[in-house]
Image (tube, rainbow, N blue to C red; front, top):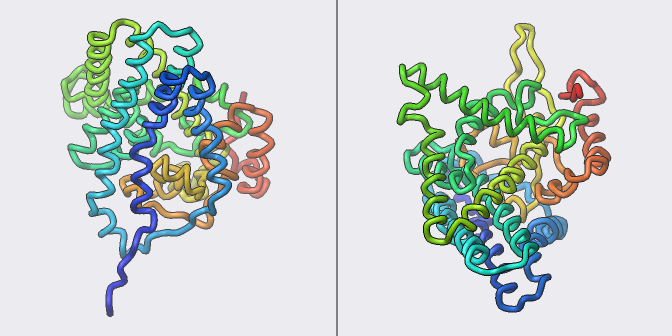
Length: 368
């Protein structure tokens, strides 16, 4: 029998994802050249308006690679290089915008909007660190630390891989939002819980090896030290204003991750068996989206069910599951909806009830 050759129709579209951070440069460059205020809002409009509109225009993509083609697809270095190249692109964009803010006498509003822009696109660096941080090679793991270091979020991969993936869609998981909980209630628990869980997990891992939490093998400290190095270099070459911008942009980037976490498992609950153990994570325990453009920007993060089923699977191989609950639009559009709790509940609560077939015992309900 002849082997069927699979052709990934999105193969070269992924190149667009690599250069998305340059949208931040484009907006700031136009403002620098024209001094027209509206140009500075282009990156924000691109993220929160243009991408959701494109998601509505283009047909949802439910295509999956055949399982027989996945091993070969995973071996193709092209897809890895897509993510690797995005790292210097991100740092170039970060430097360009911070340099503009730090070395010019700008109005406060320009500095504020520019900082929001660099923080917004910093969220994509966290997503990049998430994608490559699930991989097994030394190179991937260390590049993930570098990607996360730009926003000072070095604890994330430890917390996410060993914590969130284990407790996902349960009340114990600080990164799984509960039914009735708005994003402003969710954010403090998610942020504090992520840091404490990450350090607790790393401390326990090192203790099993007979090492102190302050050991040179501490993976969280590796990324934090890179953060200190990056911020020190920016401060040395661009001045203390650059440090202020970097410190202010980081929480904005963290908010992008919080927004994604809020969306991904809202109200969904894994059931316990007769022994009190949670069932294995199933496609029904993650909200998914097949909207094309936002999936390209986020490296298929929106095919979240398969990500939890196969966390080391590369983005190009992640599958759509027909039985997985679906969001009405991509993540960027849902980020906007989440900012308005009443709108969010109007859109999502009925979907949670439908997914649970009206059974409250199958819903992760907020007790606040």
